[in-house]
Image (tube, rainbow, N blue to C red):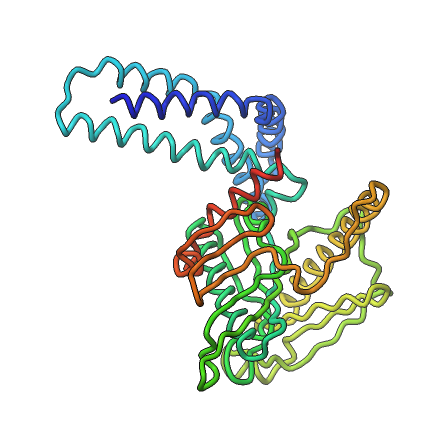
Length: 363
């Protein structure tokens, strides 16, 4: 029982320390505005927009409700533990379960508190590109894709592969994935950067030790706004025969879309949908998000240069290393956090890496 009391006391201390970052009053005002919108007679005329707003309202309401009632829950559970005189295994098991469930709920909501960036609550689009290392790097890129698809699945995020270029022997040269769900961008923003793999190569007879690199790019999904609009004159739109899987009709129609933004040279290719219209719509969203990311990056660089902190991002400046040989370790070079079970990490269990990164951002 003493251990449970100590855990509840620690939970109480940590939750109070987060009080200033919760901004519950602002969130409550946002809830009221969403409710006004939802009460409009034509609210459901646009079902897609209505579903997004309804989900935002539900997520915010759950968040506010949890943090408002947490102190009372901790107090009630602490009193229950301290007053317990029945030391039977059944009672102790019940109390342990109650504390564990409260800790788990706290951990999930604490993660949301740490994701307070401008686009953290948005859907996300990420791309993985094989780097130096030939076939090994292409295989490594596919391993990373599997890792993030698994991670998204455990967090109830929906994923859709928008475009993919397979390697000639194995793996993938590049892949673009759309991730939908609450805080998709916030959960994945710790993963943007170069990932390094060290292992014995399965692609040569000697199984020599090889180092491979893959780059993960991440952008939030944005809608066109007044601050950033696309001028049709700046766009070059091409329709091509899709080369992806999906049946004969896909391969014999001009469903693939490639859009080039001429002023910046940014190019987006999509070929996963049967409809050219659907592909164009998705490609425009990705292009818009990339242009916004470019603007944000320019502003960030200007600020860093003024402070004398600017460093150019060079290929090989890995954010994380995955070592499978001669020892086993995964280490994040930004937080120095590491784990000794790379198989688990590559299976999508990256929560601790994500949390350590987010913690470092709010300190």
